[in-house]
Length: 158
Image (cartoon, rainbow, N blue to C red; front, side):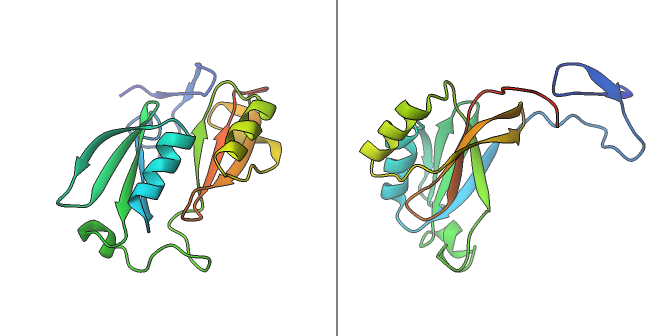
C-alpha cells in the first residue's frame, strides 16, 4: 500500500501513523428499518428517483439503487427487522440522517417536486459534505428518517 492517501481534490497527502492500510472509497449502502415497506419504496423510488434492484424475501430486505450506492429497506416486522429492536418513532431513530448527492440542485424545481409528492421541503443552506461545501436541504421520509439532499460543491475545503 502506498505511503500516501487521496485528498478530496484528487491530490495526495502523506499517510500518517496509525492510518488504515486501505482507502475508503465512499458510501456503499445504508440500511433503514421502516414500518411500511411499500410506503418507503414509493418515497425512495417515486420521490427521490431510486429504483428497486433486488429483494431477498427470506430476510425481508429490499435493495434500492441510489446512484453508485444502495439504500436497503428492512421492514421492522421482517426477520431482519425484528433483530433491530423497536421501530423508528418520534422518540428514537435508526440513524441521524442519510445524505444523497443530487445534481442539479435547482431549489425552486426541487421544492415544486417535493411539494407535489406531499413532502415538506426544508430550508436550504450551504453545508459541508464529501465534495466540499454546497447547497443542501433536509427532508423526512415516511418513517421520519432525515434525508439530506446535497447539491454540487460551490467551494471545496473544510
